[in-house]
Image (cartoon, rainbow, N blue to C red; front, side, top):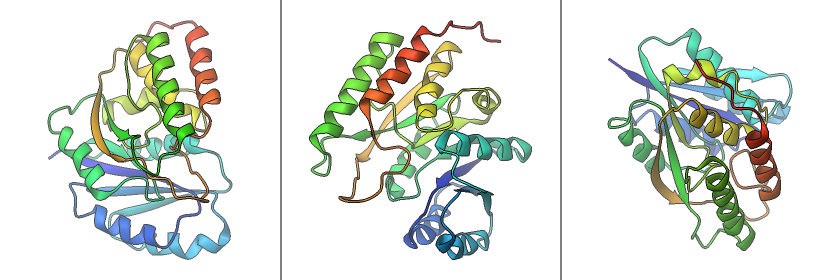
Length: 237
């Protein structure tokens, strides 16, 4: 039986994260891998609670390395413990994604079991600021212009990835938010299929610290796209 594991990079998560992880097991998820990316010591009890959950594995970084580095840590773990897993689903630890969002992406994996499935966010939410809306529009537009593929949300952290894609994803450059874009560019170069499924609205809490997959700086994301575009397209195996 093919199984799916959830991968969650976590930096200073709130107590509600424990309940969210418990509820994830109500979906078609067999294992949850959480990477503590150098959280402050006061969050230790939260990770201890998570480690006590059945089929929940917690990996600790000694300092904050960034989202890209953290995902690669989890990918390495999954490749060492593949056990008939069909793929992994990555998601956020700070309420970016609801259980319904995760369920929608999981449902699509029954149709698109290969490649990458993106959970595309709706940026028409009342919580979405003017700069965030236009930042996403600009990054999507530049991505299409440079790489000839229209993707509505290049920074979404909710992604299903087939197990067979994990080895080459370990070689993709980027230790921070740039890894999200680099992953998609590398996938196109390898002719890895990319699918999109619409999920709920973008969730941003006012005065909160932004972690990982929200649009943080459109200029930096576009600069990374240009860097990827100017690099020679290496022949893929």
